[in-house]
Image 1 (spheres, rainbow, N blue to C red):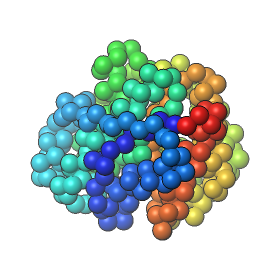
Image 2: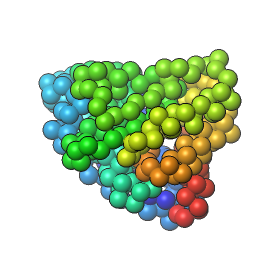
Image 3: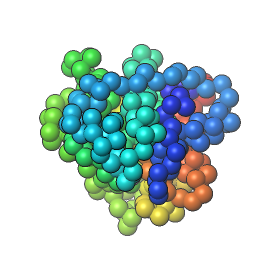
Image 4: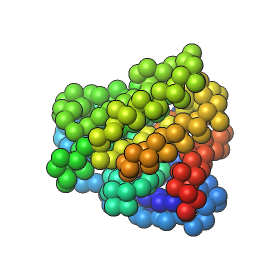
Length: 278
Ligand SMILES: [Zn+2]
């Protein structure tokens, strides 16, 4: 299985959110389970690529530590990690297109980051930076953003409202599925979400861990149901012949090992779908 990773994607955890430090923890667990993972280093995104999805003054303000980063800090370490975190998803997407398969980037997609604001543990919107950078280098490419984090990807919609939706299909489960939802209805609906992306050349799949029933900020899917979610997504996209770059999001259970376990299950789903070729 293919993973884009570098230690440069990490920063110390900020406040309540483990996201900044999670890549290393997830990578260690993946390598423990699958020692022969194919690993490529990310190509960091440029300021110009960040500015495709964000206001330039906002980008410069965050990178120069004059503006807060969404974690309510102005951490130089977080700022230094940002070109690498967005770069990881972009690199994974290019690799997925190259092999026409699945590639993982163990970073959050940071879907609450909007055009000119960081918010809710999100600085720059990696999903939108990747989508827009890809479309800039491959005109006409159609990109699906399948966001199965528990929360509404309001930042992604904010950026799409600003730059336009041409060539991008955005589905965010958090807009519709809440803690009182029927898990079976959610799982049965995955097929419809995938159909909405049938004409896409690539899907960015955000495999959020916080829809887990025990998550303090989420909650309606069991561990098995989350694994079924991931399996249906990867199997469906493979059947449709659509490459997928996938990332992490959310997950606030304590200890972090519970969240990491969910991300291990997502990788297991990929391995099962791709025929066990790791
Ligand atoms: Zn979330």
